[in-house]
Length: 357
Image (cartoon, rainbow, N blue to C red; front, side, top):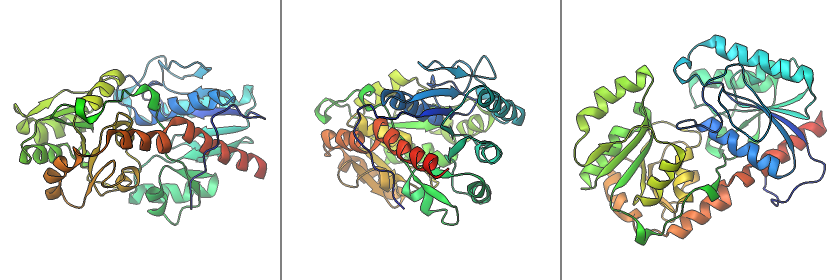
């Protein structure tokens, strides 16, 4: 199973009309944390640049150059477990479809496949979720109802019983990330993510400390489980060599990634993609990560980063990563993960599904 091949970035003939459906919790683009929302922002921008007509159903406060439909006026990050919000957004999708015609509905929510099975429009759902027992049962059933696509090779290979239509790597706006050569970098390392155990922030602190390196920690921490993890695992580890920054916006994220010597990303789960690793490489920054999920697929070992088998290997890898080429990192991000590459991949899938229907 292979990803759709990217075509040129020029506007296409025979443009499509696409309704992109995003989760309701964060705005598009996200003001801070929001991986799926960031991907949807890139997808919308790249699809419109290729000449397609795009509308969006997404979180309140979204600001895009295309029509946006929201069930709520404001984003709802602290109500992320309230199922009624998902239902209201699903109702809104059907209302939008009743008033307009789209060639394809591209859904990024859990409700997508269940609604798609009952509508006339051609639909595609991107599965962003982790590999687990619950999500395996969901994705298997969902793939029988409507076409589903994964976000990495490791993602689809980990769920072989799912009827995948393929995979398309997530894309990022590489031109919006500041590039810096390794000679202009500072000595500290960076952790960027969310305050949950599987993201490995505590492991990152321990590894940086063992290597004698200062680490900055930029992470979302506002939901109750995130706060519990921070109090139990992170707060006791903080000190002069481990500085807590909290959640950062897009501009600050780019500045940090372009200044740090490397991104330390020791996730302890099979993460389907890992957007921060693509973003780091766009800044010319090498990545040190554990060999979980899509890490080895996103980072070219010994070229754009260092993939470690165990946490004990991380401290030595921090020094090795410093010698890697910033240009190689940037080139990798532009070639493999630019938003234009993602849009071309999805466009190819859209046309196949529309033709088949």
